[in-house]
Image (cartoon, rainbow, N blue to C red; front, side, top):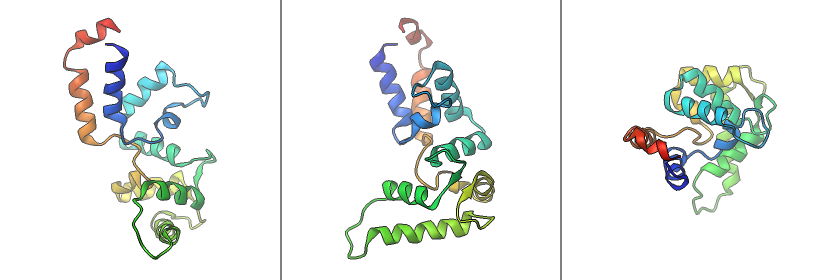
Length: 159
């Protein structure tokens, strides 16, 4: 498979995953190794809910401190929501959404989300897995990727 075909295939799977690199680069060395890439694809295609929760939490924890803060929530929600023309300050609506999210997900009421808070909320309502924006491929993209990859195994001989 040539580079262009592989890039197109990868783009099919990851088109909605804004923070893919940070999620795959587990050792934070600025490179995604073959092992990290395979582990990431494995999670995307066959990962358990537990693995997907850990991945999404790591992606949402922008500064890597083990918590999703109000500021991180605000930043992610602001970047993932569509802007609507309105007389209201759009930041106020996002701040309200952050407060609503904390009421729903912050089980220990410390003003930020730990992995335990996030995990409990997602187990109660799986739609909250990507509460702060898409970071996993949608089922349609996943099926398109698998159909292309498993269509002709000989395509990989010319890599």
